[in-house]
Image (cartoon, rainbow, N blue to C red; front, side, top):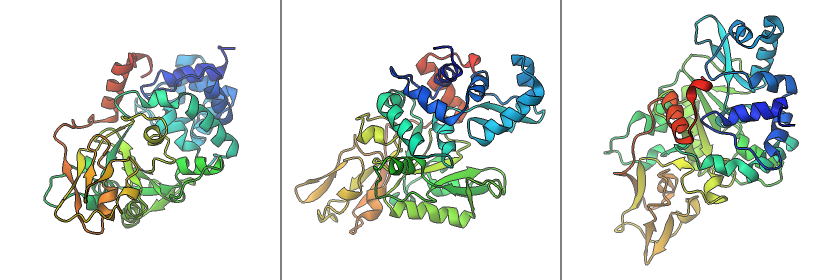
Length: 360
């Protein structure tokens, strides 16, 4: 039983830095069975993180190149693997995607009630153990208006700067809130056209069916709409090559639910900022408490107090304060994130005891 293509694929995914922890009852296998067929799982289990051409994969695995090429294209369209320029520079290449962030998010167009329930089953059984691994997959970046104008803020810490630095912009439905909706446990936050993807090539999303292409102005407007809805900006935990901005909530987001539902304090790398209250301005109205998703605010006498251990530096409550009594200040004890995604993978692999040479 353990030698099935799905078990091989699951073990391969768990050997990636992101992880894909196994469950005692095989919830992860049932989820993969929904996402791909046995032939696809068998091939994916033999792929590497480095993008290889079909000819290179065929030579390495002993497969027939012609049907292999067709199968790889189909798998990439389904979001089971990634595609792009091969590392060798010899044309289109294909490689492994982690399950999160990766395969699961690519299922947004295919997500139905069955897949949503299968993911929930897996989430409740094993996902939390993956969230506890360090360094975190996600980090929080603050809402732009919450940072004082006289404070230095680095480009990778600034959602608007990240958007400005891209060459193409797109938006998709939030798969997390869609998943909760499909299992009859929705939250009040917006689902449609709210999570963002970014590209380094102009027009990248113009012909991508699952993505609604945006102009730069529309992308900046999406950031504002998300902030007004009380959502938290999250990105990958590295400085360069940022390709998405998730607008998250603790009630539905697969990562932030780790704080609210699973009690894991370090599921995200905190922003380099923390909320502070001007006691001379605060009137203790408590309007901000409802907007803090992390339980970091409480009334202390007549003014609001911030629990710095709980505050993740998102700034959502700051822009909701009617008296403008709150602002973000820089923490003194937050190290910068890894420079690139590869640097993050190497550090995560080191912590997990993974040999990167076996998967690259």
